[in-house]
Image 1 (cartoon, rainbow, N blue to C red):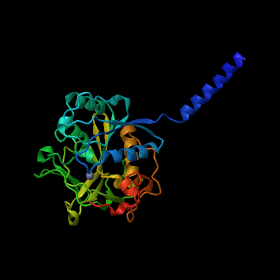
Image 2 (image 1 turned 45 degrees about the vertical axis):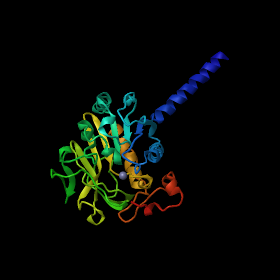
Image 3 (image 1 turned 90 degrees about the vertical axis):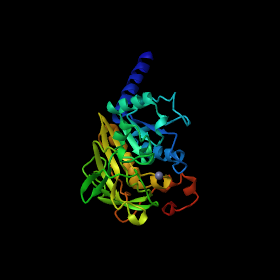
Image 4 (image 1 turned 60 degrees about the horizontal axis):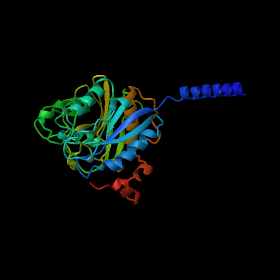
Length: 317
Ligand code: ZN
């Protein structure tokens, strides 16, 4: 009997080992939140959407790490970056919040190959932290000026850096916008339509920063008729910092914007790329086209404002 049990256990262990070999262990993701620049960025509502869209791929396992609330410097906050392949930033804080030891720990994590994803207002954070600004490529607000780096935008088919003086960042009302792919042979953008409509969202403009090791993947025209710059502004970017890869999406003001299939798919692909350097996901047939937006009502419903029946396309500024 004992021999039979051991034999059965052996078979089961072998079967489990086969299963494990077929299904690679998920990519561990730290989803960082806990603060924003104002009540207009509701990180508490955005985090469940981001967690869901990552985990539904079957590729990722997401742990939410929320910073303690403080108006001073975080003293006891030392997250275990090393336990994760990628850190997703749904987080925006002023310079005083992170002291040198925490900054160094994050810089070392990324330099050594850790992945980073920057979502929307995370590019507002830490205007005075040089390494962070090199990671994000471009950023806005929190006192950014020409001292933060040039403006970056597309003129015709060329990426321009413009050292003109002026504040960093602006945006108009949240209306759907046409997104133009500028780098179509990158793992994140391969197979996406060359032009597609993004759901109503803030089109960030006048972002400025070092733009170091930066590939602009996609732009949106910032329409002067909607308080825009009249330029084709960077929306999706890929950077490197040491051995680390950074995917930066300027999209995602609120749950309405996050529910765009274009946001979801580029977020899923960008996170995989930041973690592994490759993208294994197919582009779904529901991806928006040059003529139509495409959004997920199941995601929009996670925001009580939209769940009450508000048409996401009618979002007010
Ligand atoms: Zn916003």
